[in-house]
Image (cartoon, rainbow, N blue to C red; front, side, top):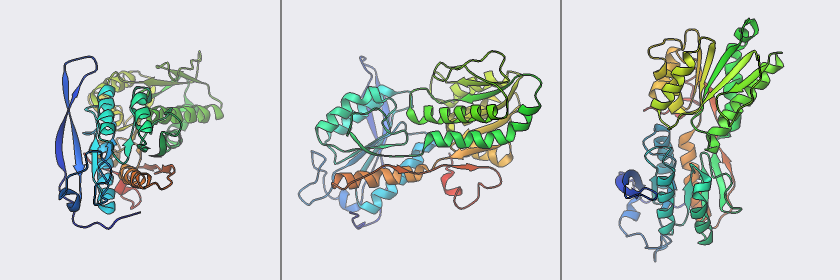
Length: 376
């Protein structure tokens, strides 16, 4: 049940979380943000993370896949809005990069050790989190999945998930992209290449997004009488000799724009490339950075991205990128906190979808799209 907000939201406080690497003495620093209401700030939280003598709810922990990435800052914004509305304290944490699986597991364990009323989790690797998830389940701590959620978690451990339908989002990107390259494919007298920069091959949100794009693109191309070969990465591999269209999938060694830019450059250096798609903000930025000295994107190569951020937004606005698919990260954060509060109060919760939209230079200022286009 919603509780009345007693006063204005205090400024968020930045704290440093010291994490030890698995099997190593090396420590890494990561950042978390705690949001409280004024009433929360005037009383110490109970040691067990539950309700104190006055009935106040303890701290809700949100363990995300990252922190500095602007997508996660937008999720944090939504979480803060819900924290203010429901009058609760939220501690939002994330590892230094989306490759730091052990660091995220340490954060999850720390959250569980504080016995919170609920936890929100966007797992980088479900298998790595299984022991911690089982511990939370045994302790009766409800977990709400968000973004990619926690696929493969023990039955009953994840009460609900707040996320985009990433497979459908990938299909949307493919449908809009195919409309832009259909004539080029139809008139080609030699094989052509579609590059796909997929952020990783482990996180469900990204693999589903890539799979949605690849599967839909393959079906659209084949429906027009052309053959397709999927190459580049074992997760999606389906090679066909002499195919009319090659879908060339690259996954960077690390989840950074810099690593993605190298993969983008490799694909753009292939003369038969007619299109390139990036499955998240890092990948979209990687396309733009990789093309900096080539100048093919927006000229003879159609570029398409996912998510937003200043660089992607500007590229769409200028026409360098033909378009992009945006999620609604603010709503993801908001509804994750809302479901955590409901679960902590013993209310029934269920999965919530936040949707995606295709945006171009022509519609990105529309009122239903503009709020989803974060900057940074």
